[in-house]
Amino acid sequence: MLTLLVALSPVIVCAAALLCDRALGEPRHHPLAAFGHAACWLEGKLNHGSQNSRNRFLGGLVVFLLVGVPGLCVYMAQSWLFGSVFGVLFELLVLTVVIGWRSMKEHASAVSCPLDSGNLPEARESVSRIVSRETEGMEAENITSSVIESLLENANDCLFASLFWYAVFGPAGAVIHRLSNTLDAMWGYKTERFIDFGWAAARLDDLLGWIPARLTALCFALSGSFRNALQAVRNQEGKHKSPNGGLVMAAGAGALEFTIGGPAVYGGVPEHKIFLGVGERATPADIVRTIRLIERSIALWLAVYVCALAIPWLLITLSSI
Image (cartoon, rainbow, N blue to C red; front, side):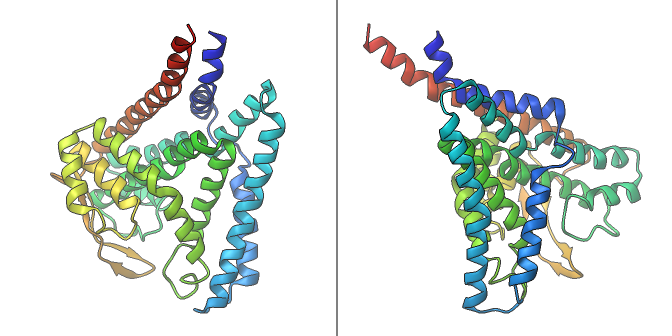
């Protein structure tokens, strides 16, 4: 039994981290905030806003330092503490800080509550805190779509992908992914200022998110309407500007049998975005349904993780009898 608990310790850490996040939420002074300030300072010093290979090299160097150095430090601490109770606690601490599911739900609830009561100005104000598009003048349909898009995409970026890279490389893997995703959110824009400086951040995030996005889409499909999720992915994959986010949102919306997306305004410039999913447009009640879909997917993810760790242990145990 003890050997089984040791074999299952990674999934126990994942479950414990999710419970800690549920109970405590994000820390008041989140380490990612300090990381973001450091990244902004370096970007302001080194990014000249020009489109050239030098700016692309500088951006890549900054990404290497900001992601690689913390990742290496966590890996060294992980190696030093490996096999001890402190090592398990360290992994739990890192993973709890990296994931942010409770925070996502709280932001979504801050929008859905005024939506339900018909208070559109408050709903617009709340949704402006979680999306980069312009929210002034948004109607309930657009606000709802924006919240659900954010929930589905961030469930992959801030939850499932971190759990995946933790499973592969331990806490260092989770940290490297989360930091690269944060830099992509800050610099991954095809504007004159960031198209070269942010190129490395965007490509690294796309690379690290490729496998987790497809696993997340599969979890969404298995946790909802599989046929409609598959139809949405087949029809819409590759048509969204985000190769990973578009896939995840299409699968989630398809699994719940509604449609999200469509045109939006960024910085005063209208942008044509495809509709994702199948069926009618999402309604405010679908925000809660989306949260439930993600939570069913979390349970499925953990169940698969248990099987992946327990089955090899069982085979080894039986072969030694």
